[in-house]
Image (cartoon, rainbow, N blue to C red):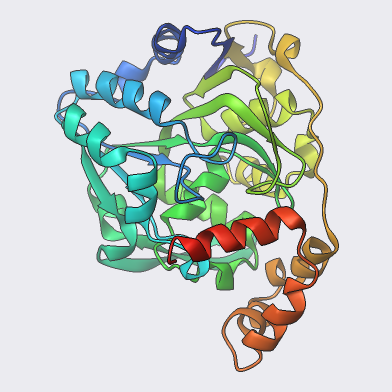
Amino acid sequence: MVTLMYSAFISHISGRLEEVLTQGLEFVNWSKNVQSGSVVFVKPNFTFPSYSKGVTTSPKLLKLLLEKLKDRSNRIIVGESNGGNHSFTAEEAFQGHDMYKICRDTGVELVNLSKLPCRFVESRIQGKKVKVQLPELLINDIDCFISVPTLKVHVMTRVSLGLKNMWGCYPDTMRGLHHQNIAHKLTLLAKTLNPKLTIIDGLYGLDGHGPMFGNPVETNLMIASDNVVVADTLGSQIMRQDVKKVRHIQIAEKEGIGTTELSNVRINTDWRQYSRTFYVRKTVLDVASTLLFESDVAAKLVMSSAFTPLIYKIAGTLKTPAEKALGNELKKRGT
């Protein structure tokens, strides 16, 4: 008989967000990891400076979660790093997601991870020696790390869920220079941060051209798990993405972080009833950018060299209308 080591919860929300959140937390036994003396860190996905359906974590969900966490723990911290490639600051994202008010009302701390003391962590993951940069706060002071991503596809990593959300803990805004071996680096992040809970915001899913330019789909779901690999596997399956083709989930499983075998997971219901087909649609620019995920040298040449202005100018001609519109919006914000 197989012992079910992990638990996962999935449900339609249907206007019952607070009720479903409570049910999900209780099903995955959240009180085991969130206690009165626990220092809890919550990592939302703020990959855009204002709330965007399917792209960034819902402020409404975050507010409800923080209220519940604050009822149990004396110290809750929410944090995010500056946007990649100097696109925007964490403070702008906090303002655009109403986090200053939410954190003030709930008595929760709010930190820009890019402004904290940090250091590199290095280890060998499945035969590859990799290192990541992390704030010392996350390494030394956190008892319970909670990842709160959205439900979305990603043109480079196929999905962006609990594991990929932790890449935002890398405080360097130029973390795009370090995408080589990202599957191994995400696994190192998971081993170091040891997320105790993952809550996937599925109010909207992002189809097509994730993580930022896709089409928001009203999926009206919430997923919770006490294991990040389980949560990501369930999220991938809900979007009908073959988890065997999601390299960072596979590497994390091989490293012993969790399991992709949902038959060995205690789940509250038959998750198949919620699945629907999402697609990963790469543009010509995405295909060209694949090299940046395979070579840090290539990434530096493109993103931080004397050739960068010319390369960006050429790349601009290959951008989709949505990408151009986003770029213009960020410029208007002064970022």
